[in-house]
Image (cartoon, rainbow, N blue to C red; front, side, top):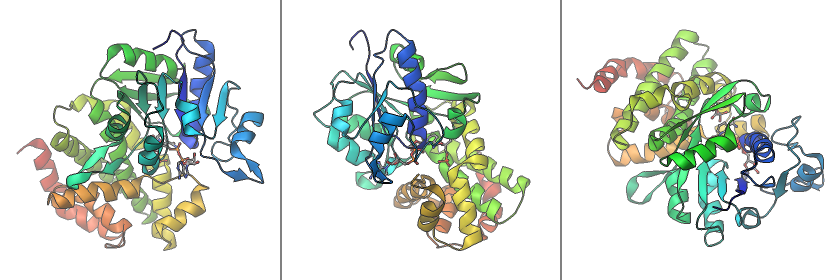
Length: 357
Ligand SMILES: NC(=O)C1=CN([C@@H]2O[C@H](COP(=O)(O)OP(=O)(O)OC[C@H]3O[C@@H](n4cnc5c(N)ncnc54)[C@H](O)[C@@H]3O)[C@@H](O)[C@H]2O)C=CC1
Ligand SMILES: O=C(CO)COP(=O)(O)O
């Protein structure tokens, strides 16, 4: 890496813009970083004007983070290669369904010495009937080290500079410190841990549980029921990580990426909101995503499908009854009201399984 490190942000949605506000501020403040931060924007027209031009003149992402100013040293770039080619640190923050295409467009054009930080929550289906972590997709395609950042981080609250915590999963202490420097602010506190796969899996899996929490809200079942879904969800997250990412530490679930992200998403996230409306409106999830999110993207239902793809192939659907039930509700195979009956059937066995009895 050169002495002044260049940071590029790939993605400019709700979280992408919010993290750009932080990274831009830190890059301008700290000598070790080049103050110019390029942000790849998937170009679109807003009232006849290009979004990149709006961002570069008004310093506001009027569509995905309206009302918040971005630092002037954050430069919107419509071409991903142009944005990324000189960067030492690549921050990936697109909705997870777009990552394979984005990575493919960057192959051969980035610095081989670059390091990546993925803020993306989700999986990708893999050959052989399994799933891959998003960091593995980036690593495999671009052949660079990938760290992850996951936490209780509703983007709008962070843009409002309300106190929040986050977790960086990084295997290399030196890189972990550099990433912490570019991300941490007085209101956004970073812990670095080396349990990378567990950190990332937590971030992806909690979105499935948040869909379940939204169903509970739509069914008007109350706080105790929602707490039960959160508890059962946490148990399935732990079991999933223990089963598929051996060596993970239980303590990682107590970091911001674990229980804290699960709670905030089940109360304040987009997955919860759309899933509640799914129950009350009778409309499809795709319709509601368009209607309620103004271009922002839901990650939970697709993640539930990805996880189910693997569980089904491994004949393990019954080992993760909450994840399986939520997926089946999303695709219309079960009704939202079936959620509770399914949980009644399964709660006892689940506790025993996690306890290892
Ligand atoms: N918004 C939040 O509060 C948080 C989001 N995350 C995660 O960060 C990741 C990114 O989320 P957000 O920044 O919120 O995005 P978002 O949900 O606001 O999605 C909109 C973004 O997707 C882009 N987009 C639309 N079609 C595209 C295409 N075909 N190719 C590439 N990009 C396209 C849009 O241009 C826009 O930048 C997700 O994995 C999410 O789970 C993590 C923590 C908090
Ligand atoms: O990941 C998030 C908070 O940490 C955002 O969750 P939603 O995508 O459900 O809004």
